[in-house]
Amino acid sequence: MTEPPRLRELDLLRFVAATAVMLHHFVGRIAGWGVDNHHNLPVLARLTHFGGFGVDLFFLISGFVILMSAWDRGVGDFAVSRVARIFPAYWFAVSLALLLFFASGASLFEDGGGIGPLRSYLPNMTMLNVGIGVPPMEVVYWTLWAELHFYALAALLVWRGITYDRCVAFMVLWLLLGVFAREGRAGLLNGLLMPEWAPLFIAGMGFYLVYRFGPNLVLGLVIAACWALTVYYRVTIVNRELVWPQVWDAVATGVVTFLFLLMLMVATGSLGMVRRRGFTALGALTYPLYLIHETLARVMVERLGPHLGRWPLLAACCAVALGGAHLVYRFVEQPAQRWMRPRLRGRWSRSGTGTGPRRTVRRRRGVPPRGREAVPAPTGGTPLTVPPPRRRARHRRRPACVSWTCCGSSRPARSSCTTSRACAAPSGPAGTRRRSFPSSRPWRTSATSASSCSS
Image 1 (cartoon, rainbow, N blue to C red):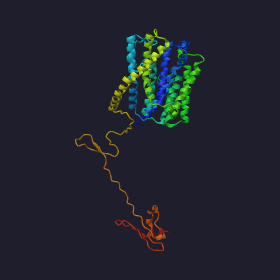
Image 2: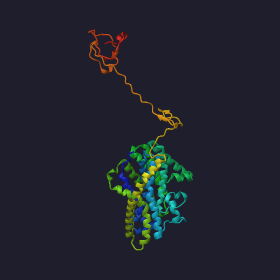
Image 3: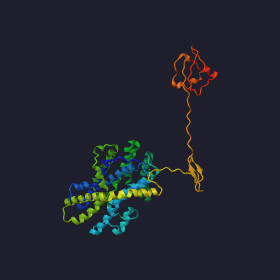
Image 4: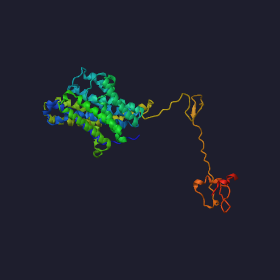
């Protein structure tokens, strides 16, 4: 299996999305949340007010990249790649949040949920904490729970086998079932299908199909439906701290439209002009930056806020977050992935499941495979199966072509050599016919076939 080509423009977009989310949190924490506090950091606060849409861009890219990386893979290989990719840095980030709480006393939760950090640590380490009612130790971790839903649904597609037709059917079915679950207020389906965020993942998958197979009407309709639903959800579902009357609706619609256009440009290759090798390093910092920026900023704002101005504090938080992300990627994420991947693949293969797509043939016990015969073992054990002896292929030898002097013409074409053997009597003016045959097998013709030579 060959690895898909790396689209470095996606690395740039991921870094831009992580930076938007980081500034959204930093400015909100330093200047204060809400429209009434925009004057504390003029201009920048107005821009970063909409930085949460970086999560929408994350989900679009995730749908694109996950489908690209899962193509022609088995369930085992897909699971190994996802576990080794997301868990090492996440485990470090959760542990760092707990350590900084004990070291500085900085609070971990906005509301706490009545659960202390020590009791919520282990559920958070599994990434399944939201499912059992334990709040995340950092507010940004909720997106990982949404990603986990997407991975579980994508694993079903990988298990069935990824093709274009199955992808389209999967996308349409997911979109429709999500809308039906929201209409019927089905708790289980709502939790599994995530109707509010599913259109972003589905649209990302559609953009990858456009990238791989080219645009068509079916994909265009699916992506357009996802865009319409996303705009509706972003306009109607708003955090109370982000409400901005007469502004939010228009900006949300424009931002979502712009993000969809960006992904369309990626799918059609229009952003290939900005593809640079250095963007790979920026993309590598994205995940650890997203995980630890809020943890570090909380401590710095509480400790350094009374001694620094807002702008110097914002610059210090950005510098520490970027430097910390590089250290996590260099000394935690990379070594852990190199250690985990071969061991996870080895254990998965040892269990008999395998990591690649494999076709199994079912047959009854004791019946040997087709083309083999059972032979008793010399020790009376399980009968052995041996292949049948290979037979030597027989090739029919074609007789040599005759040389014609009858009919008053030259040697006939090659295609008529096989039928010219029917001519047995001279009909030309010369009255003679010479034939050259192999000396070992002379050809005999009957007198009854002499009439078949007409010219």
